[in-house]
Image (cartoon, rainbow over all chains, first blue to last red; front, side, top):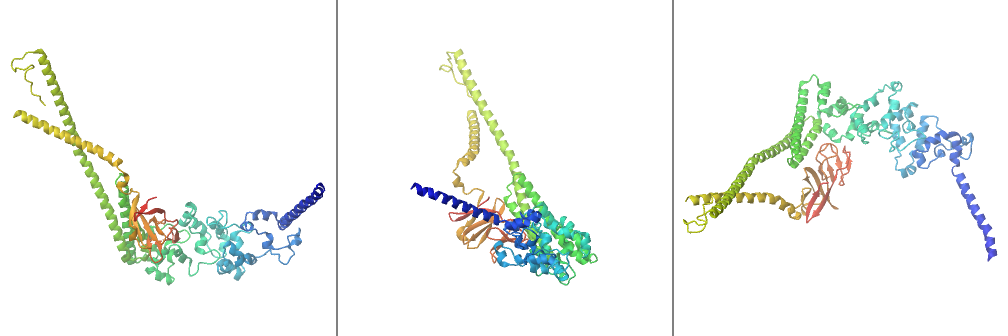
Length: 440
Length: 145
């Protein structure tokens, strides 16, 4: 028994050492690819470590090929080694994975970026004119430090997109070569869209790529960038299509939304636009300016009526009146007034007038209700007079009652005192004599 | 005769005093009684509003009711009742029901919300606020949140 134990011990030690050696070899072998590249490319490794590709478990050789077992420059001397020396090569290298449906499916990424890129201005410049200034994948996404667009530090995160585009589109020298303005991003930063994005933190607010597209050109079915506004401003687009301006836009005489609202520096729409924009085309046409004045006047009147009613209801609420129903009426009127602002895109008074009339009716009802509440409040104040009168009468009655009781008590006391002073009164025949009447 | 007159005046004053005291006592007692009266006899609280009989709602039928001065849209789906604030999260218009699409629609800027109140298209940035809804004794009750 003892002998067999002694024989088994060295065997166990060998097993443990063997397993440890195998594990060590596995650990040494696994990072060989990294270590071999890092010997010369340590800087890239630092950038790559946090990237989306590193998080997906990809290594240098997955994009660049080469022989990771070799620790010198001969590692590049393989058939599969890739280091694109031009932008077209970069696009094709990225597409070697990003156009592969099987590879992209697990990440839920589209695989048509290269095809779409080729339809864009950037892609046309590169693939048709071999223009090495044209932006390619790495110009927007980065090279080794590519992050998911959901990451706040990513160049393609909505809040960083204007800055990414401005790297080229704010370069006056570069833009001059293509007769393009270099102030578009500066203009965008003053716009209402930028205000929503940067100040209100609304990541759904439009950035450069929302209107211009990212990999592809302008979205399908659009002749010009101005038409893409309808992607978000659906109702306005529908109504615009019914306006006399739609024909002019189809004839190419008029740039849909841009003609009135502008583009990169777009501001929040207000009635001031009627004064500023219409005159650009209709300065010498009093009839058309008359339509403008009628439309703007109608909306202005209803907006003003709404403002007045809202202030009246607010004041009544602050004074403690029950305005629940009127708040609801205000909400209904607000819906009508907001609809008017969209409906004006038709420039049709016929369509605007019924909505304005409905809004007016609702606001009148709210004002009438508040007047009723105020009348009731006044009546309640007036009713204070009778209530105070009642209290006064009650006080007087109490006083009279108290006085009567006091006089009665005094009379009784006087009588008792008199009886004590005249013990034998002969006039009445009874002790104490007749009682004096109790006066009230 | 003189004594009778004096007695009548006294009685009159006593009646007035008694009547006034009774009125005073009622004015004081009424709020106290209403406070201690069982709550269930007074019906639902102001925070809960009836949207009508559940039996009157057909499947996919909707109704807008006012809860505390704000519109709420009540929808009957095959799964039951649900209710959302009927104020669009874009610019505050009152939303309606698009029976064809079976979606909540905003008439101002064509924003659409699904039957869970989530925006599906158009400019609304946030879902519609969900409201409590329950069926009590066959009546659809909507609670403000």
